[in-house]
Length: 502
Ligand code: GDG
Image (cartoon, rainbow, N blue to C red; front, side, top):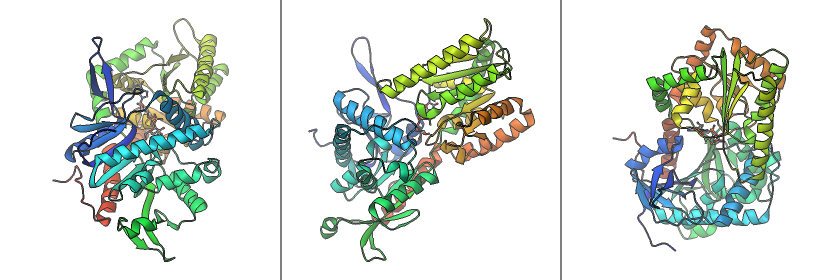
């Protein structure tokens, strides 16, 4: 048990801390901030509020004391190798991930995975409870930690608690498979505000609450009966009496679509060396008329196989020619210890090998495939070089790649082909929207994108850019934190400062 440490008015809790541990050759360790939209968005507000970030440090059995990094207090939660196998690779990525993505892959239900998920969530809740100041705000992130809100409320009824789900929430017919479906719903309802990417996700959640618990709902509000023990002890905050005469807390469940740090992508794209790199990429690819691009974590939800199938058929049918077109696919390594991901890699690489074997010439490759991660600058150069961006996810909470492509195209050029099953399609209506299961439709849309006149490309891109400029990640975090502030003022807790306060 760690000694009592400082407490903070704003605490973010996520599976992974926003820092990476670097060990030098001489064995000395240091920390660097890992790049990511979430930390970029939350950094300013956390600095102003002396915020703390609770999470796992990225290596098994690493037990380090809290420390400060870039003005944010970092509070590590240690996890053993076995816990990571059961809680992270097992329950989070072998059960919840496929279940929440419409069972694209079969979810696996193991009681020992669940037991560890419960124990690890309890540990996160305890660390968060020790870290938050009286009346403070705690914002829990994502599907690995769905039990934390309720556990935390039990430990610290004075807190204002938010939860944001980065992935979809499935329809009840699918969700109801989960043997622990009621516990998860109850876990989430410990929060005051529960955020989802799409209105459909919030609706699915609310339906599950009604079906499983029978609570009164009036979107976006859910009435959650308050534990009588807490009431008697005077510990229940923000309660009212429902029409049925019960004492209830009101929980808000609604859409808060996440975004990116739009400005930083545009700034990077405007840098002369990034533009030069984009030109060089085109030359290195043999100066094709059209460069198409896919950028994804190598994940079965991203529809990479569907994309390759459509592209391969267009080549086979002679409707595309490798002298004119190249598809660059960045498939960054992901969850490599989970069996389904190893199988997916084999399948995709078989497809890539076949297409290149059959269609590439000495001077032109059908596919330029990369199973590696790249620096942000290289990604932006690729976005700038790509005439057509292919986002063909079978199911995706949001899909930030689609927004990053748009943010980078300050030249108002390029065509975004976007799956209607990605949350981003709610906002980015000026993209060419596709159903990735409809291979014929996808093929037609690829050809349409390649043939689109410059004026139409510019018109669509300008409209897309306005959406992404007007709705960046700072606006997202502000609207979520504002909803929490409102909940906190109702609960008579001290209001924490927004970055927009003087
Ligand atoms: C989850 C949800 C939701 C990828 N390869 C490289 C690289 N990336 C970056 C992209 C983008 C991020 O990773 C991927 O974000 P996505 O949103 O596309 O997808 P997930 O990783 O599945 O994220 C998703 C998101 O959470 C946020 O709520 O949108 O639906 O599944 O930023 O650029 N970045 C660099 N090198 C790479 O090789 N530098």
